[in-house]
Image 1 (tube, rainbow, N blue to C red):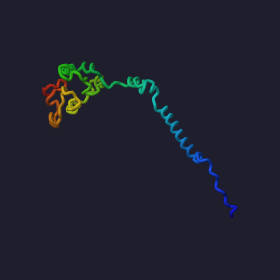
Image 2: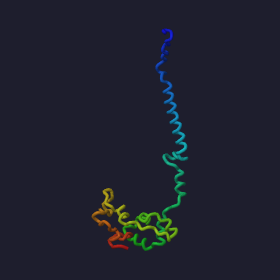
Image 3: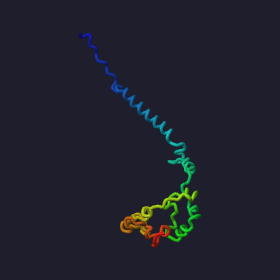
Image 4: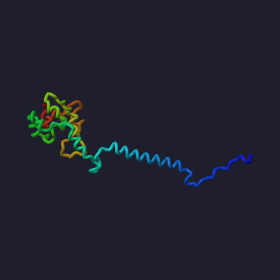
Length: 167
C-alpha cells in the first residue's frame, strides 16, 4: 500500500496562491467602475458641467413652462381700489401674489375666482415673532396678540394693516 500513496502537490510561490480570488475582486471592481460611467452617461443631462455645477439648458426648460403668476400689472387693471389701499399702507412693497398666490389663471379669465387665504395663517408667516427679524419689523406672539379662533382681519385691513377693522 505504500506505493498507492500520492505525494501532496508542491506548493507554488505564496504570492500567486490566491490569484484566482484577486482576479475576481479586480473584475468586480472594474465592472462597478464601468457601470458607474455608463450610468453617468445615461442619467447626467447633456451640457451639465460646461459652466460649472450647472446645466445651461435648464434656463430654456424653465422658459418653456407656462407662468403661474399674472404679475402686479394684471392685478392693477381690475383691482384699483386694493392697489390704492396698498400704496397708502405698510403693505405697499409685497406683490399681490405674495399673499394671494399665483393668479395667472384668474388674470386670464376673471370668472375663475381664487380662494381667499386664511388671514391668521398667512399673516403669521411674516409677522410671527422671530429673533432673526429686525426689531422695527412688526412682530406678534400669536397666543398673546390674537385669541384662538380669531382672525387678523377682525382688527386689521389686509392691504393697509393699521388698526381699522375688517373690509
